[in-house]
Image 1 (tube, rainbow, N blue to C red):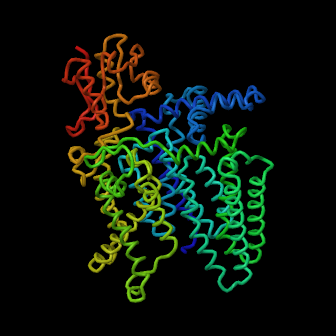
Image 2 (cartoon, rainbow, N blue to C red; image 1 turned 30 degrees about the vertical axis):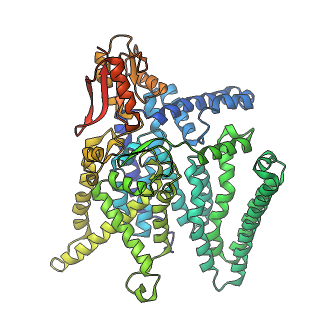
Image 3 (cartoon, rainbow, N blue to C red; image 1 turned 60 degrees about the vertical axis):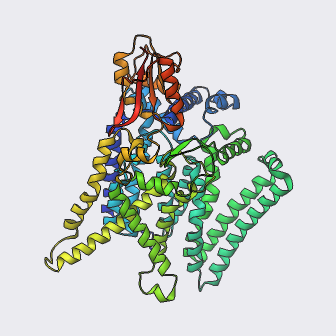
Length: 610
């Protein structure tokens, strides 16, 4: 495996510059982005959490009771609390206390900070594993994808978990050469689990690399091989005993009898003390083997501890409430979604959905290098399996395989037909930085080949003189697309789809999450009667209040339904077509008064009662 080398001083400064650039761009442009359905819930939860922290400061004994915790933390307990806590504390500090930021910006600020990590970390990983040019292309192009930029603007969890996933993989890779990073890998994994449940799949993506590395480094060292086997036997024994407890007690009995002084807790303590102790002695015997296994131990130990500590809602009933959380996501609702002319309401969903959706929503000038890079990596791996073809290609190092596996992991997790398919591309965002790295490799190697050809005639041609226009040629269409569709990121479709009109003709979901309604709020403010009732389709009651709090919607306007409203903003969704028909009947007209039309494709349609 390519060494998990530290970044050079110059690379660290470049990574910092990328973080600052991304953070500044997101902050400067966020005011135009509407409030999504999920954001409105998270804003509300974040304010409740921040009030609890105030109570903790003023009356700690009262705040730490289960009744006080449930009162503050029960809302939206289907998601971990890390990001909502950061949203709430940011709002408490920068809006409520200091008054420096508008309410929504204060909520979103932590999301900007984490989203900006993606270009920085992508550059650091790409520079070390591949080349600086590959890392730079991946970093610069990531936020040029309109849907990715849109998700980076939101106080949600999808871009933060993409950042945390990337951070854990980077720490895992660095841990191959540095024990401190092995410890940090476990800490970052714990924080990732506190961000979103996607992180629970990370150990399955990383464990094979750790085991392979440990096996290879222990070759020729019998004591190291024995130490590795002891660690693995401990993990297997603990897993087996947990399985035995489940079988003997049943799932409900296992959950009911899992408390502080129980065999369940004892097994975790044995795993924690035993694995870290064994690795301490193995490190003295053979450090490379211990380094390879250290991230697995720290993830197994630190992950559950950090998850429990970060979430006050778990403190008084950790097992029951964690079990509810896991069951909620294992049995998540299926939301209707329009795909290639089919309204998908329930499984089985098509296997090709994720790949096709990605192809149609990533700018073509960036998607083609992604496919090229992934295809070349897969071809090298396949040809390297056979003796006859092995000499044709350069062997893959495990660092390249690590990037490749993480490029497809989230896509494969979402693709099975029984997994809920909704939400555009946000559920496989953790794959996108790694696909961007493979695109960067393809582009960088193309630039190197072109530079070599040019040097036959002009020997002093620098690589930068070739890479700069090539990068610009590939990124400019994406940048123009981003500017053109902003701030309506969920509406974007690429040239492969024929743009927005082509996607509509193909029968693709036109937009979702209700944030596009900001386009018609100025018209509603100007034309709605005083104290009018307004039906904002798909906009939650919390979001309605948020728009009024931010001055984007008149304070006198009141939320209404189809039947009792004076003005209605219908968001075009195929699954809600009956809402528009009901509006025609209730209002006695089929003629819109205004709307949002992107490339002449209806997105938001406004009706006013005559």
